[in-house]
Image (cartoon, rainbow, N blue to C red; front, side, top):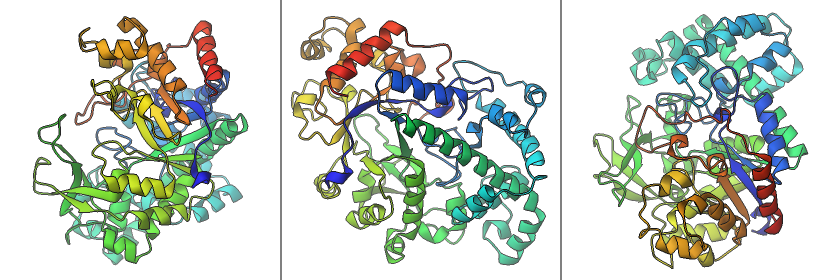
Length: 498
């Protein structure tokens, strides 16, 4: 159990997409390497990123076309130029609508793949290197089917696979063989994108690790319905004969939502998975462990018990709780992740079974300081109530407002307990007070959003759950930490042994 505890330290939560770059979205290029140097300068130990999978409708990294693939948007074009696969004038011939504080996904969708096709056209003229051949072999579990899926999606006008021609949708063997041959070049293009993504990611991770920075990845519990995973391996999910979910994932009504949340992801056929010795999950976690030093499993409570909603229901009200795979799954995960470690996102309706399972695994859970000040002095998110050092404390996560935004409209009466607890007297003091509170806690690890270090308001919020259209867009832009601010953060890290 002890081996799974995290090294005491602090880190920053920043999506790769939020980095600066000339081409509309953050990438695995120069700005990422500079951010690693900033982490070192601030005496940090961790960089937590959001899921890195290829995004679909809504641009959410938690709804991906694959549980294994990387997002081609994050491939750095300047690195490809340095490799002779692109020319600067080719890149600049496109209008990137480079909004420094906002990702323009529509423009990316129109342009990015055209540029990557140019790079692929040069790449395929070269003899395949040993690294590429090894990459294909090492990732054969998912790479071929994902690349075929994306080629078919492009061929089908980017429709969801449930709307494809019936024989493609239902994987008729003869039809699939015909299209594998017909779309072979397009399939190879998507393989090329994955090769370059992972090449660039692995180089960045190697650079970070060499400087003492560990990478924390984030994986959604569920796969997306419109994904290669569901299309290619339906037996892992609870679907009808047409591949449509019979039940979908979500969470029940609560104080924040009268209707609950209907996420729409298909639910795993846990009985089949157990009989199959959790082979799909083992492959997924083995791949995640190769990518990250620490893996944060989103919605971990769904491993113990999960909420299923009849697919015909438009809200989450008609759902019910079911028993999850529990320790059988966590044992399977432990068997394949090697030296990588786990953070269990145990937020939400935590039942005793979750606590028991986490005690058995030794995996750290999460505390969120934004949830601590409801006037209840026994609130488990308040640092004086932490029962163990084996936890990770956040000011807020990607789903929360920033510290400044969260408390902006609170009255002085509502903030009275918070002021007393933190020994402050005004909202202006809140961002620094939260940082100090987190750093001074007994929690082994502190993770703060970059937005909170910059003292930004709700204009910098990353995601507002249950909404579509304005999420996942925030970028650093010209926002930088002054030397005075850096010195203060370094001091906090030193005082509290981070």
